[in-house]
Length: 243
Image 1 (tube, one colour):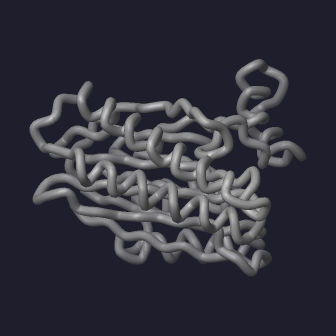
Image 2 (spheres, rainbow, N blue to C red):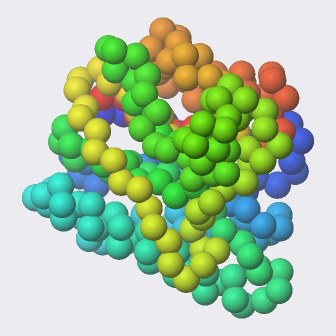
């Protein structure tokens, strides 16, 4: 199991409010986290860094390879609760941090077991011999409209409300994360990314770069280069894990 990650401010924004962490938790376990901060330039950056660090450190402290799937899910939920409290309390310290928050998408792989957790619209993609699947569901206004049949997925990509999210870490005292279990096999890949990437590439383009591109270790750079070639109005972060 190998992992690579890159983040870039993109072509428009001076400040990079994205953050990511990749941590090995033993010989056969790995944790990866991507956060996309929001708020003023300073507060968004603080929110994403704080959430990714608190979440990661709590999982590192609590993880055991003997955990059941149910115990692992409870641990991940506890870690995101702690991250949420940390960001929310920080937002109360001064006016410059008021309203700050962040998305969070994470995966914990232990053996062949994998659990993915998300809050907001940062995504996880699973690539296997059958193709590419977006594991997560965006917590966003346009995703709700798609689910209600008011928009098609294609219309959602250019809708003026596409950047409005309905859940975030740190914007309220409590947050609820979605958790997904993914069955992994040798040769599979997982991609975690902020919307700065997913807004610029469709699923099949992501599949091509991961499954049919050149070396896996160069894949994150290729994905970032494509997003930047298409304008990259937002920060871009990609973490790729290959089994």
